[in-house]
Each structure stands twice: as structure tokens, then as C-alpha cells.
Amino acid sequence: MGILKKFVYSQKVAPYIFISPFVIIFLLFWFYPLTNSFVMSFQERMLGQAPKWIGAANYKKLLTDEVFLQAVGNSIKYMVGTLILLIPFPMLLAVLINSKLMIGREFFKSAFFLPALTSVAVAGTIFRLIFGEMNGSLLNSFFDIFGMGPFKYLKDGTWSYIALLVLACWRWTGVNMLYFLSGLKSIDNEYYEAAAIDGASAFQQFKTITMPLLRPTTIYVVTISIYAGLAMFTESLMLFNGNNSPKNIGLTIVGYLYRQGIEKNKLGYAATVGIVLLIVAMIINVTQLAFTGMFRKEEG
Amino acid sequence: MTNASMAKKNTIKVSNVRENKKNKAFSILLFIFFIALFCLIMIPFYAITLAAFKPGESLIRYGLNLKFDLSIMSFNNFKFLFTGDHDYFIWFKNSMVITIVQVTLTLLVSAFVAYGFSAYDFKGKNFLFICVLLTMMVPFEILLLPLYTLINDLGMMNSFSAIILPGIANAGTIFFFRQYLKGVPKEIIAAGRVDGASEYGIFFKLILPVMKPSFAAMAILNGMNSWNNLLWPFMVLGDQRKFTLPIGLKTLLTPYGNNYDLLMVGSFFAIFPIFILFMCFQKYFIDGMTAGAVKG
Image (cartoon, rainbow over all chains, first blue to last red; front, side, top):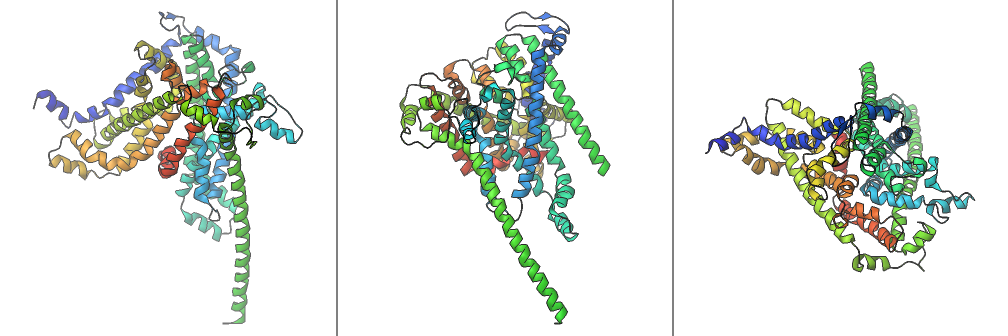
């Protein structure tokens, strides 16, 4: 056996060989781009041209950039909307579907999951057309029954917000319900039996047993919802058939990053947008984790 | 039996009957509620299915609706899909190729790495595992631009490898496999060493077969992400004949020529292979898509 072969096959070196694909991909496609993002945010840079150092100018400009602030507002509004709609209702649905009295449990579990199988391209297309402004489009013909409309949904701020949330709810209610269901399965039935003997109502049982014991699942779902909500872009891209919505009502943080970086080739400025997004996401998440962590300590 | 206990028994019976009735009513109400919700969720699917049979022109003029109008419905769009002059099946094939290659590589590489983390103790292990976790904590969208410039510098624009490579050591998948490997008895490794197998032989011949059950869920999770991925391929692939299905469908969203005919029937046709797969492998789909919550 050659020395090299002996070296590679030794028990000391083998673990590093096993880890190496991750290390390479991590350095090349994660660490380097992320570092580069920081570097670029202090530069004026265009694709294929030499970068120019401009210090913190991008950050100064960004914080007074009204379109950017609007995009941040839109993204946060969307994130808050998905948190309000996609945590409590799926949790309630999971509790209901998990009930002994539920008929057709497996069928509904699968059926509610179906929207998650559609790509954002297909789902976005369908919802763009459902919220179409023609008199005969699905929603307008529905409101017509009550003598209302027709509305131009995707040209109105509030309606566009509703459309984005409806799309999110349609796609993710079933998945979040399944998250909570798998959390419910880990709760010992004895708790409920004991509570029932003590005469606790269904609501009291939900409040004192289900909710606290579902906390790990809830934290997980909240965390991914915060990230997904803040980083939302493709839903808006599909719904408005492009990155340019009227008066930027559908513009998100990542949408603005895309506009500056790809459409206008201002890579440095766009990188700054990315860094701010990273900071906002981290702050919200750390705050959220600190809060949920604190509550846990209080009870423990 | 005394009269008193008889009476007590009867009241219990009565209250049980009442309880049963109440339960039955609740059960039916619950069922009606879920049926209603089910109908609501199915509306978009129903609408797209109807639209696949209607001419695109009616869609442009009247919008997407739920009118079941046999006078304008036909198989013309399907005929156009299968015989017309368009790139739909090139996109379909591209998506298939990317998905299959990406899933195969991701599973293999991630399992390889996960085994390294689970089977050995080595210097820097904890630090490296924190790196795995870190990659899960930064939204991919932040990397979009620097990754885009990197791919450009590497001359990988317009190539499938630019889409596939960055994701093959997938942190979520590594994490999932590592959890799974915790349940695999260490004796397998020891026995392999006694038999004179090399460290890599142990992984490929003894460990990989044992890991099979955990592959299905991760294959589905990665496959779904890859098949449905829009943004990154959209940025990297500029050549129309290299488009994946989601990009292709997106470009059809402008009402021009036969676009809407193809868009509707094409969207319909993009959903249904996955639905069929889902019907066959439901359990794995649900395991895969909810894998995060279990580990979290």
C-alpha cells in the first residue's frame, strides 16, 4: 500500500475525508459568498468591473431610501400576517383533526397537504388569475353575487396584501397542521385522562396541556415563518408577473435586492440590502428565542 | 343489588347516552367543517383543471372562473401540449434531469458527511457541526447576489451544475441523517473493521444499506425543493432551452400568442405527476416535509 493510500485510509484521517465535501461546499458556496456580501456592501460594484471602495455610503443611502423602507415595511407586514394566520389556525386544525371524534382523518390530512406540492410558479399563476381584474374572474364573479365590485385587486395595496396572504395560507396551512400533528403525537394521553378526571373542559385542557407541550413545535414553526416571511420574493414575483408592482405595493426586501443587484447591476448596494435583511432576521429571531426561552425558565 | 345502586347505574347510563349523542353531533359538525375547508382548498385546483380544457383566449377575456361550460371546453390544449411547436417538454426534461441528479448527489454526499459526524470523534468536530447549523440559520436569499457573481466568475452561468452544486451538502439533510445514524448500532462498524473492511468500505457496503429507510423522506424533500425551485435557476439560466419547468411557466404568463393555452394545460400537467407520486408514497412525503419539526 502506498503511503498516500495508507494515509487516506487511516482511522485518524478518514473522518476528515468524510467531512470534506461539506467543508468544500461550505467554504466555496456559503462562507465565501457571505463574506463577499459584507465586502461588497462597502463597495460600488458592477458585474465584470473593478470594485470601488466607498465606505459606509451604501448603508447611509439605504437607511434614507424610501423605496427600501417601503419594501422593509411590506416584508414585515407580510411576515406578521403569516404569523397571525399560519400559527394559531393550523394548531387548532391539528387539535381538531387529532380528536377521537374525527371522521376521515387520513383523507383530510392528505388533502390539506396537496397545495404544498404545487410550485410557487404554478400556485402564483393560479392566484394571479383568481385575483384577476376582469369582470368574470373568480373573485370578481363571487363578489358580483353580492352586487359588489369589480375590483382591481392587484393594483390596490390592501387587496394585494390579502392576495399574498391567501396564497401563503393556501400553500402552508396543511404543512403547518402536520407539524403540529407530529408535535401532538408526542404528548402522552395520560395528561388528558388525568385532566378529564379533574373535570377540566376541552378549552382548559388545550390551554394547560396542549399549548405548553406543543411549545417546541411552535418555536420551530415560528422561526421558519419569520425567515420565510422576511425573505419572501417569488410569491410576489409571480402574483404581479414581475418585480414591478404598481406603487411598489408588492415589493419585498429580497425583491429590492433583486431589483438593485440583477436589474440595475448595482451589486454593492444590493449586497447592503442583503446584510440589512440578515441583521433584521437575526434580531427578530434572537428576540423571539429569548422570549420563548424566558417563559420556559419561569415555568421550570 | 340495592335500589340506590340501581338508580345510580341508570343515571350513569342516561348520562352516557347523552354524552354519546353530544359526541355524535360534535363529530358530524367537525366533519362538515372539514368538508367545507376541503372544498375551499380545492377551488384553485378545480379552476386550473377547468381552464386546462378552455381556450386561452376565453381566459384572457373573462378571467379564470369556475364556469363549467362544455360549449367552449375541449382537448385542444392537450393536443397542443403534446403536438404543438413549443419548448414545454424540453423544460420538463430539464427539470427532471436537474431533480434526479440533485437528489442523488445530495443524498449520497449528505449521507457521507453525516456518517463522518456520527461515527468518529475528531478534532474540530463540534466547530464543524456548528457550521452545519449556521448554514441553516441564514436565509439563502442573502447569498443570492454574491453567489451570482461567484458563478459568473467561475464561468458557470447557464449551466445546470451552477444550480446543483451549491446544494449538494445540504445541512438539513446532513442533520436528519446524523439523527438517523444515532440509532444504528456501532457494532456494525466494529464488525466491519474486524472483517478487514476499510473505513470507506464500511460506509458504502455496511452503513448505506442500513440507511435506506431514511432516504425516502429526504429524497422527497429535496426532490420537491428541486422540482419547484424558481428563483435561483431563474437567475442562472438565461437560455430558453435550458429553462426548468417553473421558469418556463413563468415566461408564459404574458398573454401573447398561444401562451395561455400552454400555461393552463402546462400548469395542470406540472402538478399531476407529483400528485400521482404523492398518492403512491404519501407517508414519505409527509415524513419528508415535516422532518424539520421532528428534529426541532
